[in-house]
Image 1 (cartoon, rainbow, N blue to C red):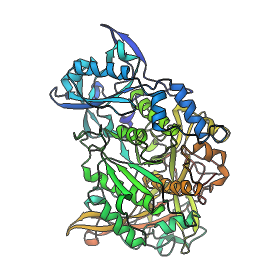
Image 2: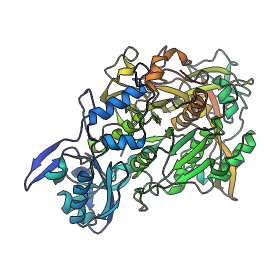
Image 3: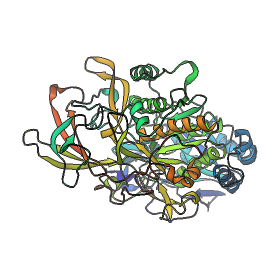
Image 4: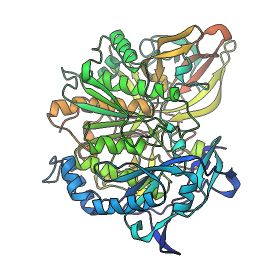
Length: 630
């Protein structure tokens, strides 16, 4: 089944604000939560009944009190034109003004206990009540049956119809997360150009590898329509991987700022057991300080459950994600503190992790490199998370999300859509670029990330197009209208994605170091990685430098960014290509190698995108141009 099956609602009308989960009356004093059952839970995908004895953990989310007031505060403290700009609320102040009341929480808890559920946790902002029990209990409590459904090569559990709850509590319920396993459809936004297992299973880049752009030149001619006026007549070999020094040089990051006194949170599933030793070895190889003392903290907060709910991923599949996120932030801001929040599941508790970092105000910047391939999700998935993002903005916490790795998703879903949560108007969505860095660590050129692969014959030197492989996520939301800060810059009525961009193309990717499983046993090694999973933590690290220089957090920075659009380096179209060689077995040449050409600024598989002057739906306002301060 292709990724078209991820679509959970066929059409949304464009509205001024996020549609909330609507409630309708049901028999017996109950109310139906409309849109609470995913559309993939349909008869054509049905694989059988869910085991009623199976365990289930979930969260019942409540609405903020005075929702419009919370949004107004979040806007005022984030808008440089407002008299309240920068006057952020503390977590305690936000709770006292907007959190659901103890009475509201108590009513939901009493009902859940009465249905036989065990109450696990309620955060201090009262945003949700986490509970666990069995599928049978959930079926009786929420007035629905549960089945197993085939989706994306998996068999996932879901309620078969919309949920219902007692009318006495329905008006306060924003959504219920975790009863169905839609969280298993969350994807990483990183690319290692490998079709087999994730890097933990062993991956190496095959030489020839350049130390900088066009150091080594291949014998392969550029594809038709793709040339490079800055390089020789044939395509250069791909780089080994850009280092922090190269990235900072290309983006004009100078001075002694190192992120000291700043804290960046990173949210991912699981936690790599070798992360500290890997980052420190990688740092030594780069001449960077190691992560020392309390500089790095890993947390699995309450409400992030121990039950393995995702059948698709083994924990090791996420180790490369944590590795690249931590090394990208540390590379940009080597003195900043990093708080890593992981869960014991792949994606079922990512909302709980975000709520924890925001409600406890653990950091001023939050980096996220995951998302759904579409924003067309039930309101019960979207609104609770969006509410947490509003609290983050009100408290002066900047939340950064990767924009996705498959362009406008046309090549995978069959129609254009942006990713969630990157489409929220309360996050800074980060797109990806192809970045060429010269021998002097200065930018040769930068263009939008959009790539097609051409398979090359090593004898005839003829390269034939194979497929479009991906690119920076972008486009226009159908859930959210264009936010105020994009007025006059984004012409579409929908919220435009991304906002800004940074290195993301895996052909010009970031060099990371990780312990992997090779034929001779586990070993530390370094490889090139890309995707907007790289772009988001690079920007997060650079914003730590910006906060240090400014002496205060930027908070939710989009209003400031769009008011100073000219401060970014405009990313323009450069049609070119690079050559690369892959090990067929992913680790060495014993099974042979294959050569390819990969194009830049290519949207043949993403027809609604283009890179051009000003804001565009590939690179947003552009890429960093020095440390950004007001």
